[in-house]
Length: 172
Image 1 (cartoon, rainbow, N blue to C red):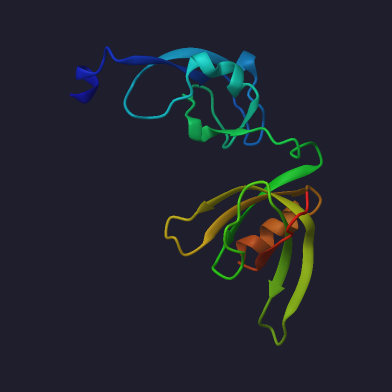
Image 2 (cartoon, one colour; image 1 turned 90 degrees about the vertical axis):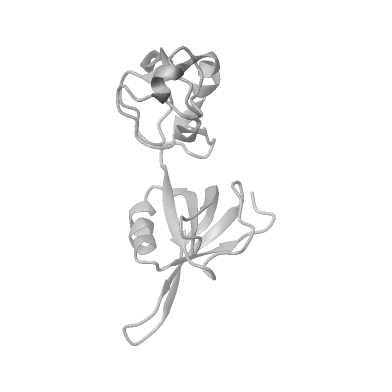
């Protein structure tokens, strides 16, 4: 019923015509205009396609996907070949309070159990790409940009909950 009553309230949004991987730039040739019902979703408007073409996909987008503002992120000058974005789900005490995008951090491996404790520096100067709370508010989600050579190892330790970050004030 809602769609019928609002059928004439449409906006010109961006739809992708070919797959765009997470972290990949939006190719203007892969975007076209689609008229969609204005239903409270924050679509990327066709009028903003020039700005969208200077951003990257936050998630993998399949052909036919109508692009929303949550699907685009500002293109990082740090995210170049040889770098990778890695997500960390951190518990309280594994990260300083007040973390924000743009800060420099160290990513530390913290292992406990097995008869001993271990600590090793995984990333000396990672750039915080984004910070967001998890759904249960018990942990923090932090995405960092690191050298791609250490990204797989970092992702494994992060999935096991064995990472922590320390802030590097003043570092750029």
